[in-house]
Image 1 (cartoon, one colour):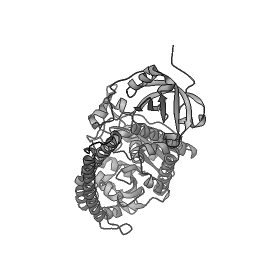
Image 2 (image 1 turned 135 degrees about the vertical axis):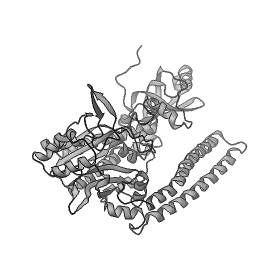
Image 3 (image 1 turned 30 degrees about the vertical axis):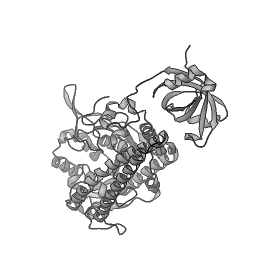
Image 4 (image 1 turned 90 degrees about the vertical axis):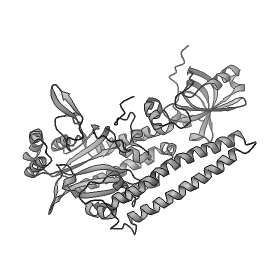
Length: 512
């Protein structure tokens, strides 16, 4: 007899059925049992619910089957939805009928702490864990909100090619391939094509995969990632910055409104996210350098002094956690300690050790950040540590604009009266997450653009079609790109950007 049912209720909808009998299908995420009773945490992709199995109700055979099941066993159950505010979602299900699709033993990912390499090798299974589930659902909400934002404002979604014959920002980070016996590249960005489409539609956005061949394994880098790139005709830098601010605020507020459970599952402190209603500080590159080097204060706060205090706080926190571990280890060794109490202290010790590892990394990094900040050379782009130092003074994204021309892409528009500067803007997220948006106003003078292409040592013939946009009906226009994975990482406060995409591709990672 088939166990499949088309009458199963999704867990996320169970609150509508309090007091009623329902059918559920899902997977066993966790289990604990006592005398004649078992508590099962069941997930079905839409949410989590505690289900109670009573040996007296189900009988010995079914109860023994439940007792034997390992994590990720797939199952069907029927039971009554009971209101219980102490449980996840405020309900639980009392099981009256129970069957198994597949009984599993020895599921590879257990409650013990696994190394990152192991989890990456088992990414196809790691996606089932609660944190990864929550991050992917927040990613989904962000994607939905991106389309709502632009569609409601009259933008047209258009698609740029993935195979390209030219670079966007230089050739050093391109994946080269062959396209019918001709060299081609995987796209770094859809922006150049976006400009062409904006000249036809006025307001457009592209949303697709982009590729960078940087040999980097930092927590901020992927080789394949998704970019949202709007392009707007008749927009200058200020209008562009206004749109960016509205866009980011819209996305954050949509997550706060629609993903409360997911944020709780991630244990995300939403205090900083709620600050999004405040205006974003707009800081020129010149002033940003001064702030970074400790030569300019923000609200009476100095970046270098603040980092030195952070370092002291980190050292004290490590000592505090180490003392707590010793105390708990002594408690565990006491005779007659109950199993539940021992498990509680062991879990606290594990969490403390994990936090100590993170703090020790900060203890190593902060002195390097301070040195890098104090020795920063004007004209350089900000590195990851520089962005971390700069944003440490803010609890909201900041906009850094008017960048030196030498460190920005060839298509950026020169600043009037200061040709060594261009009208670019980077948006840096707080909490050490760095750049999440890069954009600016585009150069409209064909001669300046040709000169810039030459100085960047790019082949002009490959950009003739792009130059045509300046020859035929050129108008002021601007745009930007938001990296989806970096934005998801900030929203979820993930340690590494690899957790922000279902199957990350980065140096050394091609499977699964």
